[in-house]
Amino acid sequence: MKSSWNIQKLNNYLDSRNGKPNEVKVLSGEIPIVSKIEFNTGKIYLREDGKSNTKLIKILPKDLVISGINASKGAISLNNYPQEIAATIHYSAYYPKENKCDIIFMWYYFKSNIFQNILKDNLPGGIKTEIKPKHILSLEIPLPPLEEQKRIVAKLKKVEDNIKKIKELIEIQERDIKNLRFSFFEKCKNKYSTKSLSKALELDIDAEKVDVFKEYNFAGVYGFGKGLFVRGIQDGNTSYKVFHKLHKDHIVLSKVKGWEGAIALIDERYDGLYLSPVYPTFKAKENINIKYISEYLQLPAVWQI
Image (cartoon, rainbow, N blue to C red; front, side, top):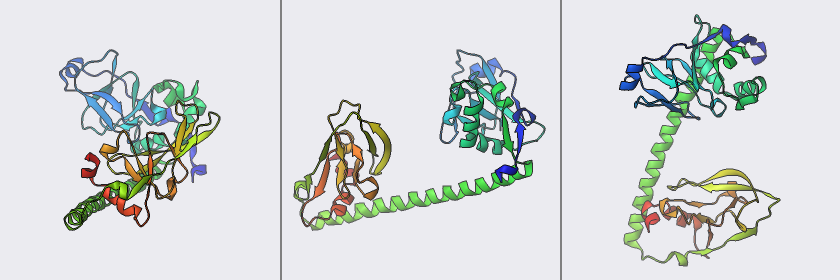
């Protein structure tokens, strides 16, 4: 489908927002100033102190807002506030020219990897250049007709709504699991005698000597019982003499953040990954179910102990 889109110059479809906000309204906080744009979501955060060391630009509702410094990191947004806002001259704002484009489509497009590659290929100095309106409006990009833009936006919104519903269901299920876990172990506490964890677990660390010329695929441990994640590649140029290699069905604990739930059971996805020495690992002793112990260690009361 993209191959049928015509190459269009952006200045035929977008105009940059000119003009300055009312200084008195800015100083009073009536017109808030952009504090930052969140990279992942594009959410605009505002401040109302009226202070700025640089000149300010005007941004109206539904304007497309681009950070000239962090656009390549995803700092691109729509002003979804029902009012005029202001930003420093390190930002720029855009609106559709004579309804020639759908501004929400343009926001999705500008957030895409395709547009990031266009920036990288066309800007002097690549994406390290501070992006100004002259850079944006001079770009040539493939654009579908307006009706196709609206159709794509409607489809993307439907997908986002479905994702939101799924996330809400997951949150409900996670809450139910926490309640069930607490209820179960409360009953166990009243029914069975307690034993030291040393009866169930033993330290089992696979410490590998760090090779400065080697790259290691690292994991990380979320707090609050949220498990492991893949952190990414790290080289051996470190002050640590050893890294801990992870193994399936071991439990890993953060010495630093264990008190807030940085404890996890290692499954096959993280088998063979590495962590720093501040993460010791443990295996179950004979006739002990490691998953049972892992569930017990998800209790916030246990983190405090």
